[in-house]
Amino acid sequence: MESLCETHTDIKSLITELKFPVSDWEDKWMDVYLDSSVSVLDICIAFSSEISRLNQSQLLLQCVRHVLDVSSDFPSSEKLLRSHNSLDDWMLQITSKNQKIENCSLILNKLTGSLYLGKAKTSAKGKVLMRAMYGVMVQTIFVCGVFSAGFSGSEKALVDLQVSDKFLWAEAFNGLQLDVNGEVRDLFRHGSKTVLKDLEAVDSCVKNLHPLTSTGADQPDAEKLKHSVLDLGSSSEKFSAGLDILSKEVENFFQIVLSGRDALLCNLRVSDVQSKKQKKGQYR
Image (cartoon, rainbow, N blue to C red; front, side):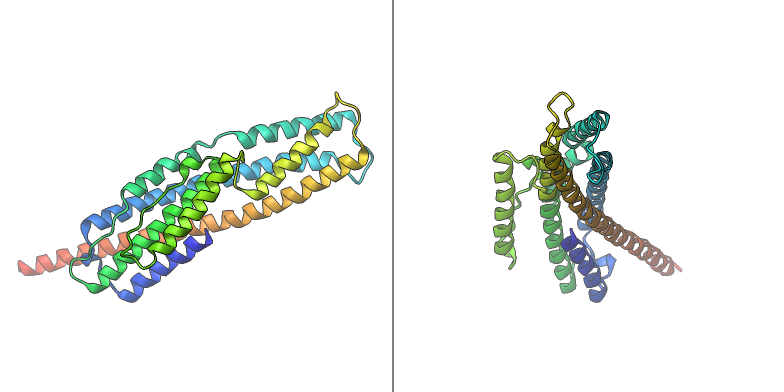
């Protein structure tokens, strides 16, 4: 996600440096760009909602750690039951579907279908910009596809793009895409429910602790329970820290895409006003 922020920021700088007038942009490309930017913003919103959902699930684990305070005496049957129920709720919540994330595959398919190498009307600068924007969208679809697959736990969100070899970076990109998408697919085919390693670690700790909190079973070994709680705390804290970083990066990416879109719309309005003034001057 950080790489997308850097790339989209670089494109904004390129537009400024080229000083390429909006009036020289091909109309079809502008329409595609404006539609595509809305789709990218929708994907950002979906990612943010999923991060929020995962953060909320962490509250259940915080409750478990608080109730099973390993620094105090062995927890009572009531505390074990409360913890057991919280772990049940966590496992149920973590496997539930987020419809916004499920819709990302449809959005990505739409973006792929509209992937378009624009043509400048006359300017050589325009050709540079169009090719750069094409590359940005290719990277955006690829990265968002991997994240969507990771969040949804399904390979259907992955996108296999075919980039023409007329681009110098095509071979490197196609190779990277083949490796990354192939690795993600292998993980799912071998039974992994997620490609998020930190979440997988938390899930493993929850499954280890869950039977130890069952009040119907024999009282678990105090040391085993203590280590299980500590392991859960360590893994969940690491996962929460990762979610915080990712949340900030998604928000930053959202703002970069939004500001770029707003800048284009502003330039279009200015260009339209100037065009009307020129036409009005011709009729005087």
